[in-house]
Image (cartoon, rainbow, N blue to C red):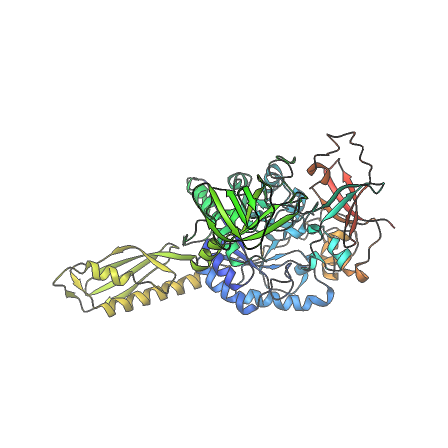
Length: 620
């Protein structure tokens, strides 16, 4: 008999409401920020709210992970320790962590997951993290299928991969540009998004090669067509990025991925199993492109070379380009004729790239002729757009209104059987989680003078206000049971089922630490992000010889000139069709520089041997 692998769809939660909507939309797990120390400063939540999420999630076997993934300072360790104890007490399933100092705090045996901020790209790093007690490992977004497979086959803990949402251009945990230029550390949850700025690409003579383009702003990740390949490569947890995204975004994206994963699980002949319970009522029919996106890319999963133009970067804008909907046929002032197969609505927002490559938008006042191929739009303001220009819908008013109005629902199926036993009638309940109970309905058994099938089924099916929906029902057609008596038995049975679920829910505990495990590096540079003494002691106990403190520990984040601020697998030359392995004589005078209008300047270093790019602070 083959082993069954549990598959997890992991959704972001900005707050309690988004978390509950993600669960109702079909998430098997959610990740949410604590009051402090989460890598999204603007997505913090109170202990009380996280407790409410845990209570609701566990009804469906949904896991709750808390993002405790910033690096910690020495004077924060006591606060961190206290907070971890509180999170453990409310039943959080795991912490997603970056700072190794947590292993040396006096904390309960809460499970720990290795954050993508740990920069997990090699078998050696993954094996180390498994050995020290990580229960799940979040891989770098840049990996190919073969690299994921190599890592997953070398460890025994679940592998988590990002499948959708915003991409950091730098390897996660290796970006120090925000700290260097803005004194806002990405490793402390305060990234200022240096990568989303427009830059000039300048050669060594000062000549501008590319002007005012978002050369480091990547498109959004979309692996919806690659989930089966990722499962075959060994991934088990599929993570949607977006702890700053709104509820509508999370609902739409989760429901889309839920449908795809359910189909894959259904076709797996039992080798795959969903990791939570419950059925989601899908109230919307939306595509991924209808939610915020900068255009999509599978990144490096299947191919390192751009196809069909600039397929990894969003050079024209760091904003959402939304859904491609058609092209302009005629433009005259506030009137626009558009060739499209989509229905457009009053209040929709449309955008386009102008002749200078700048992304501009406008709002529809009214739309005529939907469904005929050509639509006449009347706008609030005049525009001047060339015929043939591609249009994108960046705001779909009707779609957003539909999501807001039709909140997702999730329920547990429960079978109910009325059983006649000697001198009493009992109600037996069995739910899809395998929980079972039996309660006495009545000892006053009366013969009915007419069929009771409809009445009994109706009463047992009244489950409004609960998470349950009736499955199979067995009635006693010839027995009369007063409606109030049967309803009380139903309520008592479901209360017992709830209590059984709460008492039987098992939270993971932290795996033991192999004290002989050796960290992959002997000498740790500053970008290993060691910011406190407990982290330093932990790493030295695992073989580190010399450790340079994190940039965040330095006064005003001061680092020497020519310091590597970003390391990326993405390459500007390759993206622009100027890969040095292909274009050997392109007459471009290196070194190249990126210069923004607000004073950010970085020197580009191309590491062609490793097919990587480094961005350095400019030499004085």
